[in-house]
Length: 195
Image (cartoon, rainbow, N blue to C red; front, side, top):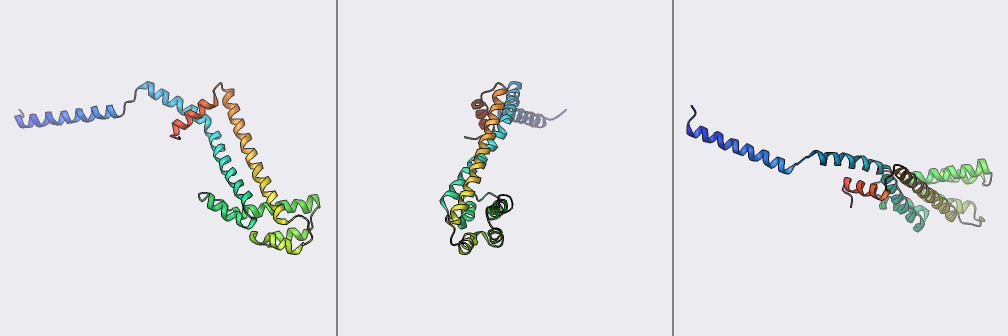
């Protein structure tokens, strides 16, 4: 037979175990109703994931358009990078590619611009392209800065319009399912802890 001390020691251990398990149950109550509600909210939140991603992209493109509107061409890539430091995009190369593609279209398809302009664009850094085009074509009525900025503005406005259309499509799909978009958005934000 166990001594009184051993018996008392075992009783104390048992009480500690009971308290520990009781505290865990209090801290993490998981009734089936809450679990079912959690699963339902998860499914509803998933319905809004694409729309939320498009909304995030839309905000980014709107900020980028503000930068394009407010700066000279040579300053735009650095300003974009400063405003979006988490972006892993190479804005300089992105803009250069846009210019080359657009001028290639002008030269080869529309035949409205000389090949020499395209060559200057291809052989210049982005920060020098306007200056080099202005030197080579001083008699052009509209400055190359304005022409190129209009291209960039059009590009960003197009990206914004596309994202808005994607958001509308996602909202329409939610409505087709018989849910209110505001409700789905609210559940999405609650589920992901977004204020």
